[in-house]
Image (cartoon, rainbow, N blue to C red; front, top):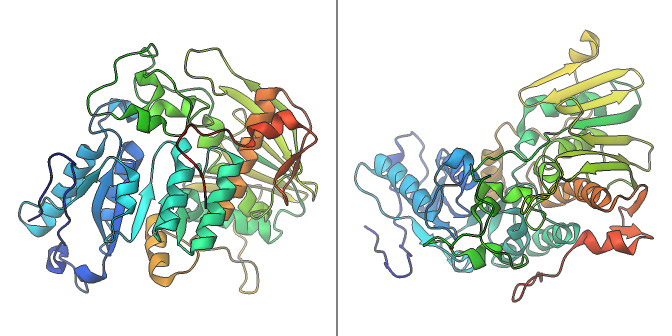
Length: 441
């Protein structure tokens, strides 16, 4: 059995025997990919469960600045203690006896220092993604990072560069790339079934939903026991603690996220670019940006929004909460639409069209988490690598900048990744980190 230090909260992992998996051809403990989770709120715990379904993976550590509390999806519980219980119980069932081998950490740097960890997932609030990804890459860990990739454009560039520099496998949690409907729709567009593509429409949700049931707790409160709030803030500006600021509702504050624009911007605009064949570039201009930002003591992201991203090839990508949910590609000969679990076309002929053997066939990943594990083994690129995720979320980050400043016709150079002729807007491509945090690759 493992031992645990009650002061540090660190326990030392014990391997789950191969026989416990109950499968023919099971993976020996020495050949399993060991994974540590950084960020164990609702998304992190959900993703951990997905990894535990893969017989080639063993969860050996969990890390969070919060020990245990409510305030996550629908006021559910989260924190490292919750994640540890879930993982230990899972492995107890496999072993057939009590298992206590999942280590716990409150500082991601201690997690990354563990030599027995092969890969990490980063499922923290957005403002923590960049530093942790860069440090994980330096530590030689393969990385699964939740979307949106980054809080700022400069962070995204650093993350992609670090992944390339240190040669680690990287998967972004934009799981729609592993949805057959989006892949099929993109193949129809890329192979010319709708003629010349001219307009793409992304319909994303609006508002600021109270996912954590903390909308009535925006006034300062004492910091709860077991929650390292200063570490939670990390590089972000100092702010008084309030429950509505943290956990799942962090996404409604621009210091930590970009609201619905970037939360969903890691999904639909990503697939839009897949179909547009612009995955490694971006628009040259953001036009007609209009956002509604209702006053609030903490929540300040857009509740309604519209902007157009115009590309050098003449295609216009429209992103708005008023468009049909999903992605619609419009061409001279018809349209194709996709959303999670379904796709449609303007005619039966387009919908039923066969993609020939000599035509464009896009990356086929039927299972997003399994694709990451496959690529750890093969050392090949995943279906959602860092550079593509960076290029996709940059569109939405630029849209937020244009809407926040009321800019129309914001010029962007996708090659140099610079805003042209507007110093005020360019200043929002990044922000000054709070000491002592730095982003150095």
